[in-house]
Length: 373
Image 1 (cartoon, one colour):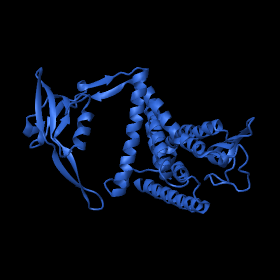
Image 2 (spheres, rainbow, N blue to C red; image 1 turned 90 degrees about the vertical axis):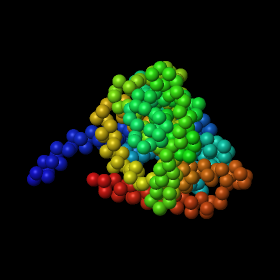
Image 3 (cartoon, rainbow, N blue to C red; image 1 turned 60 degrees about the vertical axis):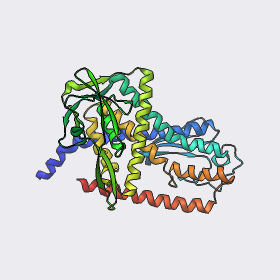
Image 4 (cartoon, rainbow, N blue to C red; image 1 turned 45 degrees about the vertical axis):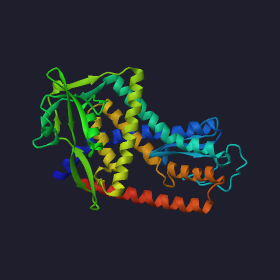
């Protein structure tokens, strides 16, 4: 009985989590599919169905062009079904005529590439505008590049760096935040660094070479990273807010989107070679949990999470896996290079492999999510 009351006590939180997750997924998926839809229509392709959610239809309406706009029961995805597609994988429907001007498969390879790539591109555009809006509205909190602590017997202590030093530049590159220092040091483990430091109103030049730290991946292979042994000043008075206008905010939003996309690809690459663990991966359960927690901090943090998930969806969809947009783009690239579509049987086998991989991945991340509880 006590366990039942405990469960009832969680119901409001569970509802909040599900609502936040539904809002997040609906926005991200709607924008993704709208990208396919708009560019497809621009290319003259007929659209049979535009669905938000999967499963049983809750609401549906046909527009003047004959497209069924529908909202389905489960807010875990969505799709656009073009005229000439047999199913949601994009497989050609042999019962339709490729001579039909609205048939997806009658279009030029470049029109198919544009339509397919539009989904991920719209995800990146969404993220760029959300990040830009946040930076314009709230500014950016920056930890100034003051040295708060110097680790004993480190490269920094041996070179003469002291607490309170303000790092102006490294190898000629201006330093705006402590994260800039971290990035340069990690990426240059075996290179000498020339630091320009402000100390007591005077500029001082210090040369040092990061210490090499050997770490092992999960396959036993070794790799090197650099460390110099300094810690940022933790006093809030050393934090500052950088403000942005519309133009600089859009540039920052684009840079943030590009940076996040590159970090996702870097993580996937390191995951494959064993330098990252699967602990950072998550499925629907993890997204529900995170979205619910973030929503408790307000709408702005939830928008930031939507932008991050949108970038994730864009990157994942561009992976060269059949069924995903990236898999279709791979097939179209073959068509561009060799002047003819790839063999239909090869496409079908590729789709089967892609579906199997996605199912296996979904099962894996769901088990991983459940194991975290």
